[in-house]
Length: 200
Image (tube, rainbow, N blue to C red; front, side, top):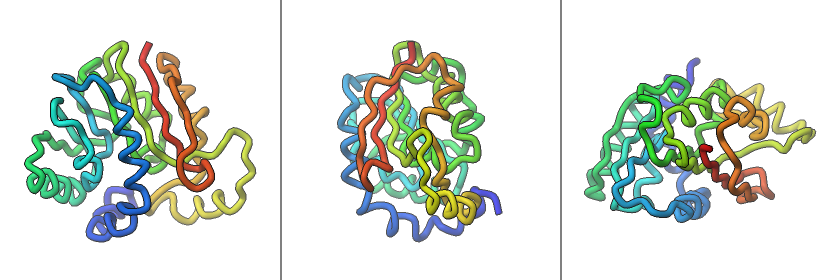
């Protein structure tokens, strides 16, 4: 089953499982974004739009996701909040945007979902302007971490919902133009991390 099809099935239940446990970290990640006035911001892998309530209102937004069912929920959420955002069905590993189109890219819980996180991050870097920032909230293994249960879990669920074997440092290797500004532990004893990158 492809992720597009599995998330179509998960869409009605997604917020119930993901929203409350992760909202605090999501909000903290977005709070790190500064100087958003008149900036063009991509919410890459917007899902059901759980980021929307926390986003500053003074920027121009585009949200992308591969699953129409998730985008439908995001559209409803944006409408209820009177939030102006363009929503586009797109694969994070092959974004339909021009080079250097965005000032900021937000990637929450997407790198550990896509089949090739390195390619997804490289695409985010491609569509980011020089000097632009990428804000990431996701779960990553540490380099060389044993984590046998997470790796077993990964074999069972990577094609249905999420990966549990992604190492951020390996993901970053395909994007040499990205510099790590901050990399701090968040939830689950540091399994989840808040990361800020700058394109140099």
